[in-house]
Length: 417
Ligand SMILES: [Zn+2]
Image 1 (tube, rainbow, N blue to C red):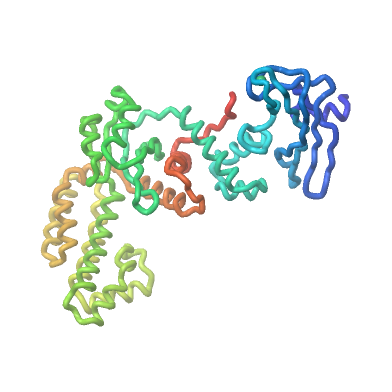
Image 2: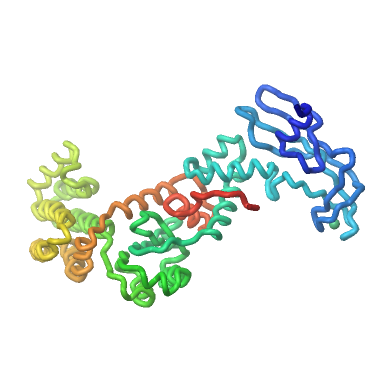
């Protein structure tokens, strides 16, 4: 059996290096390893890589290593400085086991990367878990994500959804492409202009673009021009998530129409104004209290109550089967006619929108597209935004979307392999 010193060196992965363990103290909450040069050590210049036989001086440095159970592991390493012929200046020697950027061993950085890539912990979680500062973990996370994105192969998409998301309260935007079959984000780029989506299609290449069969996108963005140029064959499908969102926004406008600027008595206006969230819920999800508010609404103001019921009726559209497109079309026409009968401008504007886009709305039925994917991804992005990450830059936000909602990072491997 190998001697205890050999085993300790193996534990620290020091075989084949110029270093060896010279002491090991086990305390209540940490283990301190003393690591020094071997007798016949040579010193590698960190500037040029040449080996030197003499050292200028030495200095103890501290590195943190992978914890041993609940005990943190501190390495005290005697590091040499050498007067190297490459510049005739004093340089520190190269340490193969030390991470380039942090006061950590490389194997600790690898381990932290692996934990971050498990997608089970946030940066703050990992910082707490390993007793390291937030800034260090943030940097490791950013570096590993940047590395993985370079190696990422975009899967061949057949059905895609394109959407924009704001970063920092609407100051800047990112463009997000989702593979509707994988149910994952496969692309994020800066901006919400045509160019932002062009980049995706250019990287995908003509051959793979030609295989895209359907695309759903928000209608009021320059994405249409990009799709027309790169994927003219793809059938356009409205995104049910956006349609419902638009409908809810219209309801809110109706509420404002009748409360803020209306000629109704103050009492009625107040009741209507308070209904903000009540109007957004589907009837089947309403609480008893909300149902009471709705009953009150039914009594005092018919137009808004009608609008609410009409909104509710719209959801039935999504229940049609691909074989019932004709019925679905009649349903939409009937819905539009009824909406125009109301005196509410916002509801009429939504009806106009449905009228203009009937064809792509019917494609929802034909392709059986559901809003579940967009909903799920939007919810996750909301979580990313609300976490106390303190996103320092847009690039990290984009990478985080690719990781948490997308295809990035599930296959982690260390940097040098
Ligand atoms: Zn040198």
